[in-house]
Length: 133
Length: 357
Image 1 (cartoon, rainbow over the protein chains, first blue to last red):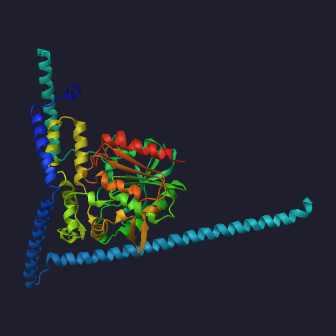
Image 2 (cartoon, rainbow over the protein chains, first blue to last red):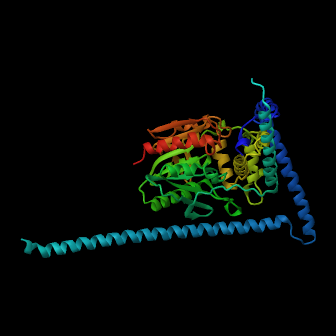
Image 3 (cartoon, each protein chain N blue to C red):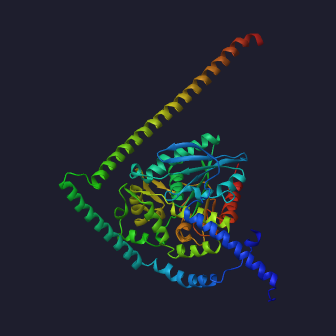
């Protein structure tokens, strides 16, 4: 493999590089023009419009025979997704509340422990006071 | 030029024959799809999850530096580009430098996520993920690194959640002034194309539309990359790298429909980031509230987010410690490959180390 790794440009490489050098800059310029953007937009919109029209007609036809169309399935899927999203929001809110409650509990426990420790110190201090004096 | 000896000629013939064998083997493997490069191989643990978003902490026994670094990934591409291949990993390089690395990945949205808005990412996911990173790393502060659109989320998150102790904010190829971004996006800005023309049945902007939008900016790249592949098809390492990179480029994620509409309206048509005041979740987020040190990394040959789209950030943030770095690379080269290894990652490490406790 070491022999094979020695680099030597193939005969066609300069040709490809030359084409790249000549074609790429103007192509890059073209795709940045408003004309290109508008053309792509028009084609895309037209494609979408045609697709939606065909879909509407095929849906109408399927409905004539009481058959569900892709649009109906899509509607059901969208509704399911919306329910799932709502469920996600609710469970996230619950999770947050749980987290808050836990941190509140931890804070109050820590505070109670600190108060107890202070009281113990005070009691020990007052008990030890006269002796040490 | 010395005349070639018969032994030289023989060597050359032998080399070409050997290459042809390797080329045939690799070509068959590529066509058959039996050759799959390993991507995102650095071991990690998922430490937080919400919706599709997840926070991963990369395993390392070399953690020497505090605070931890949370990478906030872009919402339109896959995060494994930062950990593309063993030995060529942005993440691996950060870990080697002793950094505790976390990755906030937004995941791949589906129909459930079509209503996801910027508020969800900025006000819900990001602050919670950062708090979790603080908790897991047992640190009082956190560093944030945002890439591309993840940089926008990072800026808004840091400015909008001053309660999260962000020590340093690094940004890579972050678009702020979207009037400098070229291509089909301009048609969307002018209203010649609407998000609703592009969304699919899941209510999201499909991954393919995202890919085509990016690919249209470099129309000849796909053609000439095959010439590069053919030339070096005999080289196993090149083929692995090519496959990993080409696979990532095609592997875009859909963009939630609601987020796309919001981005088009606020960020593109109103170019609101350039005002420094962004209405979000019923309040105004001010970029001037970012007072921590900021590193803004731009790629000099970035065809997606050219430097002028990013450099305006300097005038918007309130930080007195603002560093700008221009890396001689492209948008992807900033995060992967030789340029990232030699320039981007060392620059980030150096900047973070100079500001670490």
